[in-house]
Image 1: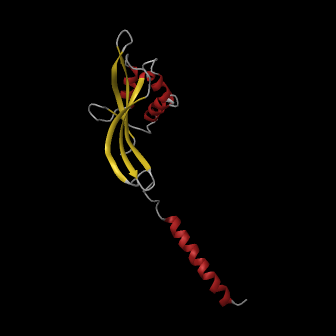
Image 2 (image 1 turned 120 degrees about the vertical axis):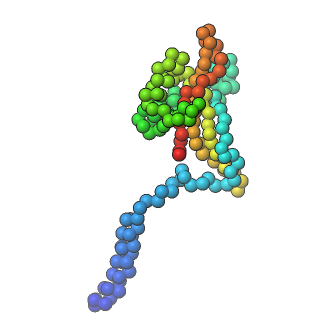
Image 3 (image 1 turned 180 degrees about the horizontal axis):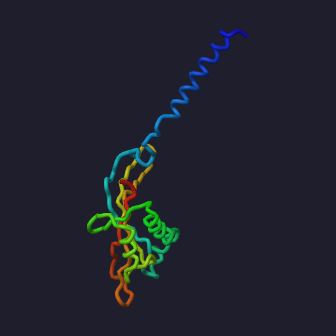
Length: 169
């Protein structure tokens, strides 16, 4: 084999190697699936709605059935854990100011609050619908945790907002 034949075949291989090397040195794209717009038509930007996550009426079998697959305790604990581990930020519902970890712990220390009383969530979402593929996409912006407000007799009077957590900025 002569040297010209070797160079002729090595040149494209070397060029591919250098292109790959350059591609690996490029900064990672800041776009991710979470930041790309959802496909389809935006039907709601932004919709806010409540979701009951705890059945207050033992005779309401339909609500019990609807909530039977929810891991409510795990959900509530994961939100608190994310805040305490500084992976999520809590905000005051009334002032919209960021709460410190100490302020969230103070909410937990209130006499009328217990994690097992978190019974309602409020979602801030954007909804997209792709009618070609019949796909509905929801993007959660924030979740508010609300807990049961009970009378001295234990009767449910309503729900109190604890705080909300932004899912993205």
